[in-house]
Image (cartoon, rainbow, N blue to C red; front, side, top):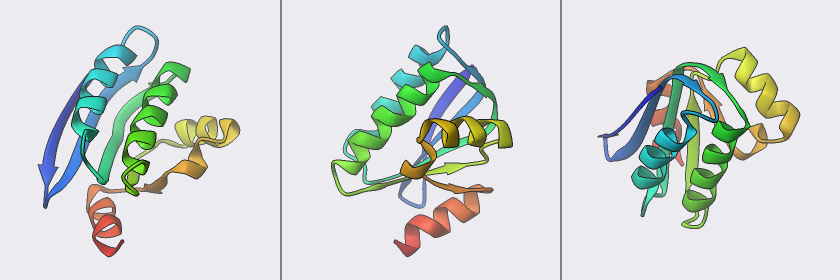
Length: 112
């Protein structure tokens, strides 16, 4: 698992690759939580994530809560059908806007 953060058009973008499970969630959390500090618009790109465990869901929820506390919005990009199913089954999907591409995520946040 690899996670990085960057800024695109003034919006924080967190990009993850690989599996996010109990062994790798702490590395993902370190990057994600550090990147959302003080932010109100965040994109989390999961296009290259092939597995997301409950530990990964917890990180997404923590990031969401931090951004939401500033009346912000978190957009998830490229969530696979399997990940969307898990998020839907656990009720997590309702917290996030989901789009297919980074460009759609940027457009969604700029329109907000």
